[in-house]
Image (cartoon, rainbow, N blue to C red):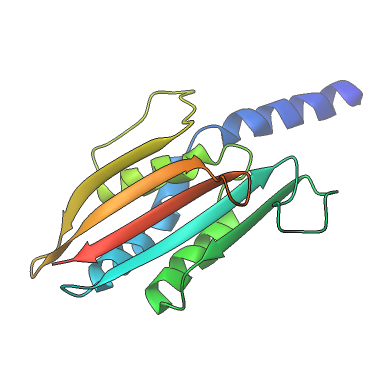
Length: 157
């Protein structure tokens, strides 16, 4: 009995290290809508914070396995991305969230099996038929809160 339970845990953890096409696709619609909604000369940012093994520094509860929070700054399209990430975003392997976001915006981008992302900062242009946005994706250690933060900023043009 113990051996089967251990196998299930190991298999589950292995699956969590890979963003599947389905997982990335669930994020794609709200993320693309968020970026496409940003008007010319407007900047919108969302932040998805994750902590594995403890709570955030500004919390009183230190006895948690993981924590996550999402800051959407009251912007409705960002709220939809946050809702998805709060429900489905990875915490232990939170780099998968950044990989998924990049795969949503660059549909031909794929990552090697077992690639663990420790940090990334990149800028790209995402266009619609009418206009576009300059998009910054940053995934890094969060010096203020602890844990990791995925920040997505869209600057419309």
